[in-house]
Image (tube, rainbow, N blue to C red):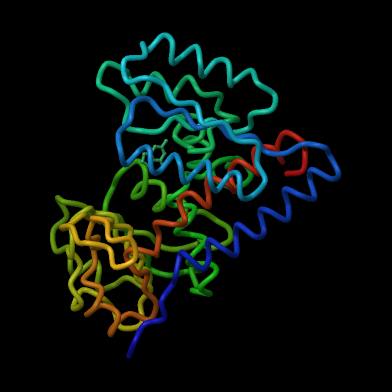
Length: 302
Ligand code: GUN
């Protein structure tokens, strides 16, 4: 058997089209567009490329967007003052501080300073709490887990009563996706197990999964014999395992590998996400969705 590929690149296009249409409708009816500011401290090359793509995508869907770049030696106090300025700005509905921050800045303090009703990353403790309560309390689910759930739904995979095994317990992916899949509601109602580096018999847990979500950061961790035939396998791992020269651009690019042994796994799984082009493109897409929803909450449309 060869698994059906769940392509994030295709689902991204579908969702961005939907967002663009909705932004135009809201602009027409209410005279407002979602506003997103990205705050980047320093020039970490990976962060620069992420932020550039976030701003480019925000522009594409018709948002008001601000790319606020700050020098690497900005003081914590000055950064907090910038956040305060955007908290008070009525044209800004989403504030994103790109991580990691330089060592002299306390990232917890910075993330906690963002107005929870503009925290489109979903990292503020208030939004983590809202996610835990579930249902209508949830405002901004964190973007990568929200993207994973959306992919599962749009692929038509049944989650109701499904055995979901999450490999990894990070605050950004493992913990929130586990909570989201066990809640009542669309794309959820699953029975969830979370496994991690201290779990005994990792393979035995994985073998029970109808939906296996792997966010361990270990290239090729999940072997084909750990996969239940027909299961849905979501590979969140993006591991740089080397470099190559791109045939398209002639430039050096990273060779990326997921947490799952893709070539062998695709012969056993029913559905599988590729790396790259799987979960990756969904994170920025869901950031756009959260920013749109932030304006909709403000206008009383949600
Ligand atoms: N750095 C890497 N990924 C992310 C993300 O999703 N949000 C923020 N704020 N910083 C990041």
